[in-house]
Length: 358
Image (cartoon, rainbow, N blue to C red):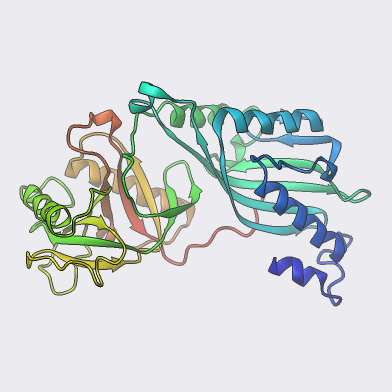
């Protein structure tokens, strides 16, 4: 909205030489934003904003007319019930606009099947709109995925098919419990970038320098469970975090954390166990790498190495290795292939790219 307002100021005729005038820029940004907001609901996109021979392409699809374009949107809506979130929209060329987004798909799982197969399928990326100068309508719409290298973006991409099938075929399960809220900003091939909202935890030291696999972990778990169930009168949450960032004033080393309801740290029931503390955390932007199985210290070391190497290769600044923390989402009885585990590291000064360059 701010950029549209700037575009409408009389002093700014054209941002790019030979490009759309300010009034056209404002109008285009308004209809793109509106169409993306209603992409998968009953309102839908306004077909008047598109050329009859609009060309749409992404790594898995290509359509060369408006009817096929709209039919694909309708299919996605019925088959996968997409959840679409727009992060940014900007003019990036004389007659070009880019939208950065996250889209989550719900796989068609139901009944008893959902208890064993309910994968999380999510994409992040950029839509590049090419506007026909003579009409002001969309002539081309091309999507690019963050999870693919540049040379695997064109239709038909075998790597894109593998990417989708890998997510769709996952047995990983996330329990339907209260969990910290976050926005998925970027899903790369080897990691996710998330922006967490502040959340509250109950924590206790584990008496170890290891994130997992130490003998005292059971005692730490029981101490926290005793607090949230018996004293705070709250339900179980997910995940269980283990973090090197222990609460100030506690024994140095790794601590275990349970997520608790907002308001617990200030005004809630104080823990009777002096080893248990409550506080509010704001971890901000983090990179996370998922993996399955029954977690060992060796798994954490391996996945941490892969996560940091991928971030370094992409030029993403991050905290040092000793700031990595771990998340385990499932109860102990969950089979290894169905477990969701993660290593996470805080990012330094992360921001989404302002423009996708082909």
